[in-house]
Structure formats: structure tokens, C-alpha cells
Amino acid sequence: MLNTMLDELDHALTPVTPPMPPLVDGFGRRHTNLRISVTDRCNIRCFYCMPAEGVVFRPREELLTFEEIERFVRALVPLGIDKLRLTGGEPLVRTDLPTLVELLAAVPGVRDIALTTNGMLLDSQAAALKQAGLRRLNISLDTLREEVFERITRRQGLDRVLAGIAAAQDAGFEEIRLNAVAIRGLTEEEIIPLAEFARERKLELRFIEFMPLDAEHHWSNDQLLTGADIRRVVESRWGPLIPAPRSNPSQPAVDFQFADGRGSIGFINPVSEPFCGDCNRLRLTAEGQVRNCLFSTVEWDARRVLREGGSDDDLRALVRESVAAKAAAHGIGQSDFHQPERAMYQIGG
Image (cartoon, rainbow, N blue to C red; front, side, top):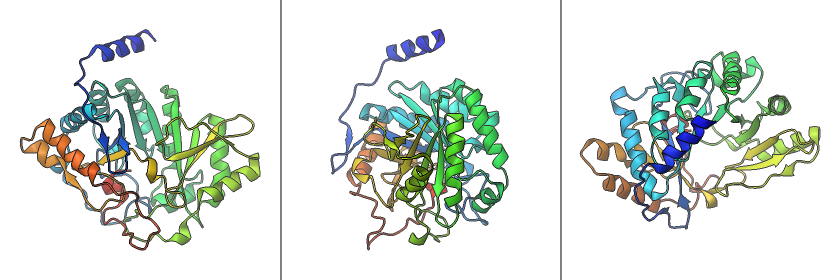
């Protein structure tokens, strides 16, 4: 407790670059949340994210270094960016990731750092990540059955994911969310077991609708298992869910409490109930491209600015240009919607 208080005091006394006009797009959305992909590599091959074979990864020299990522973040904090999420690929395959967490946690003005992971390498890294300053974890868990896990990931290893979840709890992480991608014809029978697992372990569970970001472009609307569908299944087992207060108007999930008071559950419904009107997120790909939307077909090259002598003002100008070009919505379901050529693992989850 004393160390935490001293760290917070230290953080508060560190000089902060004076704030600048915030990152507001043409629809009045203020951007404060940056998702940073640290690698396009992964140790599994989930069909909703990556192709099964023949994946060509970026050469290491094309990926941003930890120092470049830290500089990019430091340049954006005065514009209001204060919440970070590290993603991939699988971020834990990036060597020495706790070092990056420590660098980012030391940036004045950064108030929250989270990590999205498949959990397979978490058992050996959870404690170091917590010590480095990571605050929150989202762990992918689509099923509790090995055979379904292998159908989705095209690899073995459910036991390693479960070990990672246990290690994260042992390391003292208090905010752990389980992310379950919902796919019609495959994961309906996973809903109740996953909810029971989360309730028993006092973990938050969120179901995410399957989105058209698969590398093989096989997504179809027939595979859409909506949040409303899942909610009906949950309520058939535990009774009506109670809407939870919305602590952050820009959060993508709609959260509920179980009527018996044992835990919470959330639904992220980007296809059936788009939440674009409240979006506050920007993305930085592993090779340094800024994206203003997961489904954007345009990118802005921050790596060029970082490696060709550009200033922090140049970085800020580039990001402002990206934000200004942001569309009103991702457009899924519209006649003019086009799935991005880049899949989820290449963008950052």
C-alpha cells in the first residue's frame, strides 16, 4: 500500500506537458483511448482472426521499438490520450513486454494500461506485468471444451489458458475480463458453462459478436450470434439481468448484474447494435500505422515520422489528420461496406 501511494505521489509530481486542444473528430467524439499492437505474431490460429497456414509476418525491423512506442504515447498524452491497451497478434510473444509496460506506466498523464491476451503465456508473465504497472487484463476464452478450443484456434492449449487465468488472479490482478467470441452454430453450448466459470471465480465475462475481420474472408451474417440471443440464454438460466450503471459512456460493452448478486456480464454488439456514436478509440499497428477505426481502409504512417526525424508536433499533426478523417460509423450491414483487407491480427485486437 505504501509503495503504491509513493508511486502515485511520484507520478503526480512529475512535470506534465501542458494540455493541448483535444482530439475531436467531425462528429464531436473526443478520443482518449489508444490501442497499441506490439506484434502481428500469434501462437494460435483462431479462424476469426488469422488464416490457418501460410501466414507472413512483418520482419522485426519493421515493428516499432519499445522506445518508439513510448515516444508516440508521450507525444499524444497532451492531446488527451490517457488510456492504453496493448494488443497483437498475441502481445505476450513479444520479448520482454513488461519493459514496455514499465516505460508506458512512467509517462506522465497515462492513467490506465490494459492488455488483451489469449492467456497461453500468461502463467509465466502475470507477476512481472503486474509489477511493471499493468492494471487490467482481458483474456480470450471462447470455450471450456478442448475440442471446441481446437476447432476455433486450430491449436491445442486450453489448459494453458486456464493456468494463465489462475496465475493472473494469484498475481493480484483485480480487473480481469474474459472475452468470448460468439459464433452461431459453434458456441451456443458454451454460454452457460462460461457464465458459471466466471461467476465461480468472480471474473467479469463479456460476449463479443463475431465481426467480419477474419483473414480468409469467410464471415457471413449466418454466423452472427447476437448479444440479444446470448442474453436470452443467460436469463433462461439465472433470471432477468439487471442493467449496470455505465461508468464510461464510450465503453463498447453493455453490462448487467446477475439478479442474485453473483457477478456481472457484458455484451459487445458491434454488428447488431453498433456503438460507433460514442467511440473514443484510436489504433497504432505493430509497424506504426495509425488507424481511426478497426474497419478503416486508410492508415497514417507514424513510423515514417518517428524514423525520419519528425518532431512530436509532426506526430500530433498526423494523428489529428487521422481523427479528422474518421467516418461516422464502421458501416457493417450497409450496402457500401467493404471488409478491410487487413485481418484482426494485422490491425490489433
